[in-house]
Length: 289
Image (cartoon, rainbow, N blue to C red):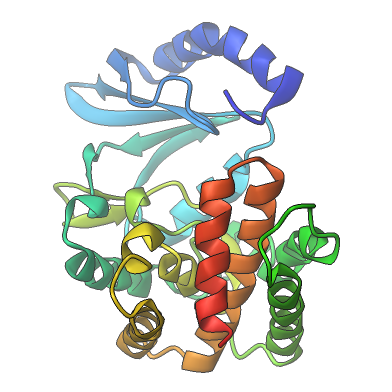
């Protein structure tokens, strides 16, 4: 399990006991892991009272309380339905993890994803969902790799980093709105289900503007987008279509897309994921010209 250290390894050792505890708590049977050894959580499919459910066990440091708060606020509209929760464990409705939006052609997948986001963007309210982290505060931490770029980055990385930091500062100077955001939205995290055609899972919920959430989707499937002839125009078309479909300001979507691509690219390079970093930085370059 990557990136969890000694605490995470201890959690892995305790997993069998944690599964047993959850099974006893909620009277679950026929539990079968979906993502054994996952990066941030373990999801198991099972049954309760003869009906299908999913059990999610979160690794140490995961924002389980915030996730539960957001899922409760959404109440199944666009997002997976929360059935019950305990510390570091969520009991969820069961979806079809083998069928995500990535199984669809890209253009249709983007349209379906946009409709899911439309349902998720609601007022956080004054309950628990109103206390989820603020996107501005979160992105402040993401500026660190841009201010101290790791060695060996491709040519032009310094200019991209400077442009990304400037874009973020301008965006935060005049935030237009505050919505409940998914926070980690991508096509692989939108699954088929019976209650509604497509349902978002795995939120890392935030409070902020819609353009920030939509920027995460704009960065999806870059390997396909950047391989197209005329990648510059393809990037522009994607952003314009997404912004127009959801009535999001084009300039704000471009700004957040630039910042996210640059920040994630620098972090990926630092972590040794050079291929992913190069894709993200190429995308940022296409935006900044």
